[in-house]
Image (cartoon, rainbow, N blue to C red; front, top):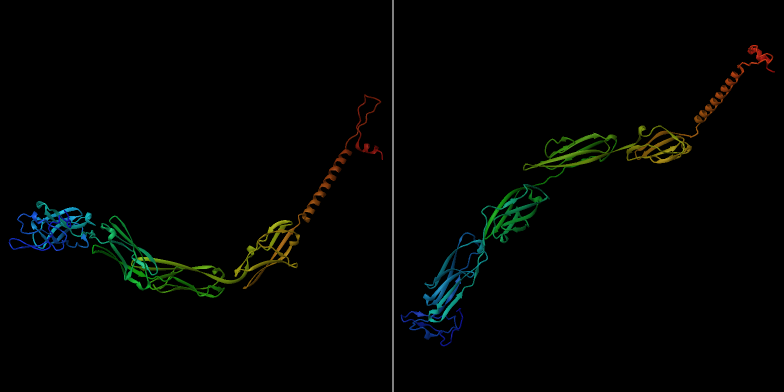
Length: 478
């Protein structure tokens, strides 16, 4: 029967009774409404009563796993004592049962705490057993207390950070601790010197990882310390690592005149911050922190020349390199190379041709080729149709703000039926005529030199007589 149950109300006792020995026996004044059948206690000298107080002593806020926990239950009041017991509970699991003797009484029990006890409820309960008197079993349970257990490893967190960090730059830092229980309840704090970071914390099982972005500020230059604290159960694991914050100025590369006239003096200077060694076009500065420089007399060949400067800084054994370059522009007048613009061009009439002439200079000059007399301009660098009108002498002139330059070009445009061809054809005709005449004369002379024979009809027995050539010729009619 539970505490507060109303029994058959035949006799309501609200004041104390007296034992035969003179010892007072009280019913708890807080148990109003509970009726006791007095006639059930044969020869009883004391009336039963509930405990006035059943309370479990507060538990530690956090209890380390693997250590003993002492549970204490405070009991005040309650009679008869030989029928009153105290039970210590974990949830509904009975851990210890003891009779209450002293007044007030403190009942204890020792528990070896494990991970499974995290979040468990502990309480104590009194049991007034009057079943032997036909009144039942009366229970009264204290308010429960929840236990929080934890494991914080003895090893410090693993802290991963850069050794050096440049002002204005950002890097990630990581803090990891394994074997932590419960990892989700741990608190993590990351800081760079006095600057608190804002870590993102993730938990996987018993492993906790915190990640944060650290950005070096100018006022933090020098030796700093990154600290990671992991706190659980009122205990803290800590790791520290050194970080050097530095600034790297440069290199800065300057020209005294970025666009220098031809023949002028140009000074090139490369500089950087303190402790930085600079090298200008392969020539190092005298010492770290000192500038490097060179001078030159600007010529046409220096136009678009590039100058290179490298800077080297050592910070805590780490080497940092940076490079920069600058280009010089030299201003010079226009020029036309004869190699790029031949003096004489020979072209056929009615053909497509390209006049390949190039001028140079800074600023870039404009190039025009005009025919002498007619001032006809010929296209440059693009195909155009050539006819006899383009035949003649041309003045090719390159002009810019730095001056002018002129070159003479002759264009020889040849007719497809040129005099040479006509002469050649005439010679062939004459040779042909002479050849025919000579051949005819030869054939005619040969015919005149041939012999003539006459046969006399008087006698067939006489031999033939040969006529001489002079005779035959003499007989020819005049």
